[in-house]
Amino acid sequence: MIDSIKRDWFSNIKGDSLAGTVVALALIPEAIAFSIIAGVDPKVGLYASFCIAVIISFVGGRPGMISAATGAMALLMVTLVKDHGLEYLLAASLLTGVIQIFAGYLKLGSLMRFVSRSVVTGFVNALAILIFMAQLPELTDVTWHVYAMTAAGLGIIYLFPLLPVIGKALPSPLVCIVVLTVFAMTYGLDIRTVSDMGELPDTLPIFLWPDVPLTLETLMIILPYSIGLATVGLLESMMTATIVDEFTDTSSDKNRECKGQGIANIGSSLMGGMAGCAMIGQSVINVKSGGRGRLSTFIAGLLLLIMVVFLDDLIGQIPMAALVAVMIMVSIGTFSWESITNLTKYPVSTNVVMLTTVVIVVATHNLALGVFSGVLLASMFFANKIGRFMVVMNDKNQSTTHRTYKVIGQVFFASADQFNAYFDFKESIERVTIDLSEAHFWDITAVSSLDKVVIKFRREGTEVKVIGMNEASATVVDKFGVHNNPEEVEKVMGGH
Image 1 (tube, rainbow, N blue to C red):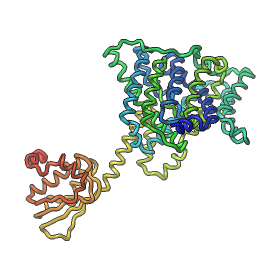
Image 2 (tube, rainbow, N blue to C red; image 1 turned 120 degrees about the vertical axis):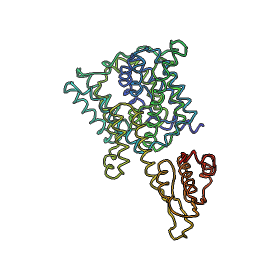
Image 3 (tube, rainbow, N blue to C red; image 1 turned 60 degrees about the horizontal axis):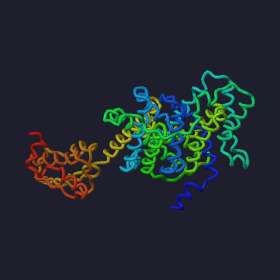
């Protein structure tokens, strides 16, 4: 345990500290913006980001991943806040955390293994596009100073690392923010700053129990929102954890992350914050700035609170152009550029899944809907592909009184009709042997197909023998099969 603490917290103190500082600065305008989207005071998003980041640094399953208030979650809160107010949002956030903890104990995080690579790639590309699109309002109807500052920021971000020694010692996004802020303050540039996004809080968060009646009616109001928030939150967190796993070439505990997200959201709601989840953009900033351990997430949350409460005058002077430059860097770094060149190399089905995920996420801004669509398509393509790898061979050289059908491959709902089509029920023959030694029956649809084949042959007066069935298939067939049960035969055949 001591070794684990040292590795997660103190193996990269310098890198985690600097990366956490960059993330804290980038979190401020986003937390404010997400609060505005949800229709609540900016401090709700800022307090949430602080609480979630600090708590998840201790209880999360993915070191170095940043969790805070997010746009995906904020979009789901709009109607609840509008119809019932902030207190119901806090109650819904509390219930969201409880649901996520249960999901962790049910090991739902393990379901990530069913999300294909093409869906993850589509998710990443869609988020990169959304991150870039979110910066466009800051670049619309503005003076040339904003474009010049943004271009200068991108220049610093990409060129500063090329400097000897110092270029590797300091994260370029932090240098970008500091340099552009000093420049804007020195020359008094009239450009949009963080303070223009909304009023920063001037007090520390305090414990707040949601002021709602503890009745069944209240539960019925918040439950649908909480289920939606829990689902989107876990989905985005699990996908982000997978991406950070790849960036850092390390593994993470997805089920622990589910529980951690739940605990963090409960803590956030009790401190006056809204529910949140992992942030791919901030996580990428953290990783690319050198953050690897839990310390970076902790520092990001702690510095966020310190800066907005005690250094609000200074933080308010940061030009939005500097943060826009950082987020454009994130979108460029997040997008999987090789996925474009791979369009000509990968199968059409893989490309369709990836592009469908991208289009739906970008069009709806609903990450869950896009990923679910991608997973559904990938499953359908997979089932169709596996369904083709099934063949039934018969020995034409046998006697006219006996025919052996050898089944090779997987028999399930997608290949059941094809399985039936291989048998000639009108052939005048005395005995039929169905060899299943190289086949596997997966579901009740497959068992039903076997029933129909056996029963049809018997109704033609043919003796049928099934051999070679493996233990797993035999278990399913014995439990659900009816071809050896005379009372069920007529039900299966529908009286025909």
